[in-house]
Every structure is written in structure tokens, then in C-alpha cells.
Amino acid sequence: MLGKLFKHEFKNTGRILLPLNLILIGFTLLGMIMLGLKVFSNSYMGFAAVAMLVIYIFGIIALFIVTYVFLMVRFYRSMYSAEGYLTHTLPVSPLATLNTKLAVSTFWVLLSYILCFGSVYALITTAVRTYAGEFDSTEFFAGFEDAVGISPKAALAWALLFMLLSSLSGILMIYCSISIGQLFNKYKILAAIVTYVIFYLILQVVNMIIMVRSSISSAEEMTLVDNADQSFLADFYGDVIGIPTMIQSVIMIVIFYAITAYISKKRVNLD
Amino acid sequence: MSTLLECKELTKKFGKKAALDQIDLTLESGHIIGLLGPNGSGKTTLIKIINGLLTPNSGSITVKGAPIGVESKKVVSYLPDHTYLNMGLKVRDIIDYFEDFYEDFDTVRAYDMLAKLSINPNDKLKTMSKGTKEKVQLILVMSRHADLYVLDEPIAGVDPAARDYILNTILANYDENATILISTHLIADIENILDQVIFIKNGHICLNSSVDEIREEKGTSVDALFREVFKC
Image 1 (cartoon, one colour):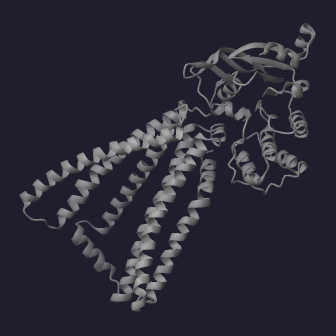
Image 2: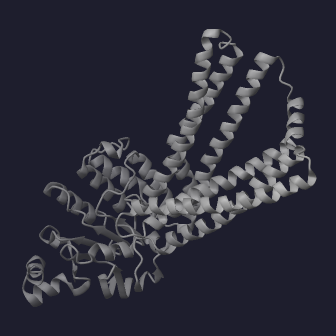
Image 3: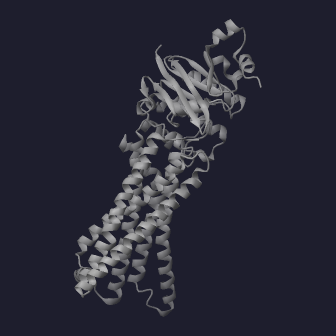
């Protein structure tokens, strides 16, 4: 039954999200071709290059906004609006339904992250190849290791883990807010939005406390070492931003999942 | 005949108001039962609890001895009182969906009924009239070989000709071992197919009787009795 849930969830979300991601791939290929053909070498095309860069950046931002908003609306509609009548009367456990939606949503968000990074990498390497001769990936990765302090493979693994955790926590924060909103007898959507804002404010305060505390300790460390070498950058991103943020994400995932699962199992109240 | 559904002291409150107040009810298999009451009497609340869409505050409810959950949902076929399908989907997609999730879904029967009504399975729901959407939903619900069919106001929104079609569909697909629970306040239209009625008023069950008993003992039709009991 789980396989069937996945099949239909992918089918329903893919109708919008697959074309959206294909557009990004299409634009990336177009950009690579244009860079490869040196269309921007002409001085008149300088303006066009800037304009296209701006469109590209806004396009990527739009991709994430549309993906999150679509997944949010789909969760609300399929769980707690008229369509919820079908979702909740299927002979499957509420947890199986929730887990499927969560896994499929995480897949789409993660795919967008990976495609964005891939797109940026592809465009940069194409530009370098075109305008500076060869792109020496060995040199680039060695340079990366010198600057950041960890190997590119390790950095990629960290980035993937970081993206997975932030996708999961971001989606679950939305699911949890919508689920709490539907507990109200009236103004359910408004209640969901207010819940989200409250969660957001709490997280901002927690983030601020973590950042201030970590910055103070690492600044002390830096003074002791008296040398801001490359490994400091790795330490800064790893220990100051990375680890505490990941711990925070894991805590968020556990709390938001527990609340959402409890509500979908025990407190469904459809109008 | 065996016990299909059993409620004990079932209570559901919205705020301080009790929509269902300590209801005790047993339904046997093999009946067509009218769940009758005016607006706001608790009909839809009871139906939603049977289908797991509302959680009762107290009391218990079982279908074939099992609490509301995966097992009960396998044997209950539910028609809500409004459209509840994803309007962007084609009828064919929804049939695939029902076929995947309900083991008792009869795809041949569904396509057959669609053909009889000249409904194109490749049409999207959002392109259909309200009446056609209701017919599609009824076809989906009645294409299951369920033990309990729960139909919430199946004839409220359609014209008299469509009402006849709907009632005929219900009767034509009715298996004698199954039970159909129909909620409505359009009693005259439906009276002939019922063999049992439950009157519900302000969250209490005030009558649970066979139609024959009402006719023989009270010497009146269900419709006339309803008007008498719920006189404003």
C-alpha cells in the first residue's frame, strides 16, 4: 500500500514540479550554449548578460518559492480541505499518509537544491572554459581545499546532509503549522499562518542566541591562535554555523513531526 | 444478519455544544436505513465519526468489531455531502486511484455505469456540471463491494430525474448482505427504498424502528411521522 501512496503522490506533485525543474535544466543548458558561443563578448551584449543573470537569480528564488508554496497548498488541500475526505477514508494508516507526503515533498525540495547547485557549477565552469581557456578541475578542487580547509567530497557530503535536514525541517514546520491551524473551529488558515509566524519568531531568537554565543567563543579562540589561517574558515562554517544549525534542525524535525503525527492520528476534525 | 456497527455512549462536542450526546446505536447487516433529522441534528457528525473524519470526545464506536481505522475503512464506502475529489484529475485517474486503494473496487462496474450515463472517463472533473460530478462520486462509491455504504445527502443537490437515477443505482448495486445508511431530509423521495429509519434530534436518537412497524403500529408514512416529530 505504501508503494501505491508514493505512486499517486509523485503523480500529483510531479504534474507541476517536474516541468518546473525541467525549466531550470533547460535554462542552464541555454546559458551554457550562450556562454560557449561567446555571445556576451560583444560590448553591446554586456547589458543583456547582466539582465540574464538577474533573471536567472530571480528564477531560482521563484523556483524555491513556487515549490514550497505548491507543497504547502497540496498538503493543506489533501489533508484538511474537501479532498481530505478521501485522504482520511483510504484504508491506510495516518502515519503512512504523512510519511509519504513528507518523503515526496523532501525529494522535490532536495532535487531543487541539487539542480540549483549543479546549474551554478555548470555555468561557472563553462564561463571559465570559454574565457580563461581550460577549466582545471583538479586545481579548482585543490584550491577549494586550501581555502576552505576540507576536501570537496567532504564539503559535498556536509552540504547534502545540511540540505536534507533543512528541507525536512522547513517542510515539517509548514505541515505542523497547518495541522495546528485545523484544530481551530474557525479561521483555520489564519490560525495556521499565525502558528507559522510564532514558530518563525521563536527560531529567530534561538538562532540569534546561538550565533552570538558561538561568535564570542570563536573570536576568543582566534585571538588565542593569533592567526586566522585557512582552517579557521572550516571551523567557522563547521562549528559555528554548521553543527549548531544541524542540531537545531534535528530538534525541529523531531518536535514538528511528533506534533503533526499526533494531530493526523488523533485529532483530525474536518468541517 | 450480524452486527455491523456499534456505538456506545458516543459523544462529540463542538466547543460547549454537544452535536452528539451519549448515543447508543447498533446497525445490523442487510438493511437500507434512513438517518433522518433536520439540519444541525447531528447526522453528518455521526457519519463523519463512522468514517474517521471526526474524533469523538468520549464513548466508543466499532465497525465489524474493529475500532475506526484501517480495517473499518476497508469495508465502509462513503459518499460525502459535497464534492471531495481533486478537480484537476480526469475520471480515469480517479478510478485508478480507487482501484489501487480499495480491494473491493469493481472497475468494470464503474466504467459500465459511466458509459450508461455517457460520461467520458477522459474528462476532467472541473469541466463537469455539479450534477455530473455528484453522479461520478456516486458511481465510485457504489462500485465498491463494501459491507457498509454511508451516503450523506446523496440526492440533495440534483433534479428529480437524477434523483431517480441515483436511487436506482443504489438499489441496482445493493448486495443483500450489505447495509446502506442514507442521511437525508428529503424523506418522501427515499421512503420507498428504506426498511429501517433512525430519527435524530439535537444529538439524540429519538426513534430507531423498521418502516413496517411505523406503518403498522402508528398507521402513518415515515414522511408524515417525521413532520409530526420534528414539527417547528
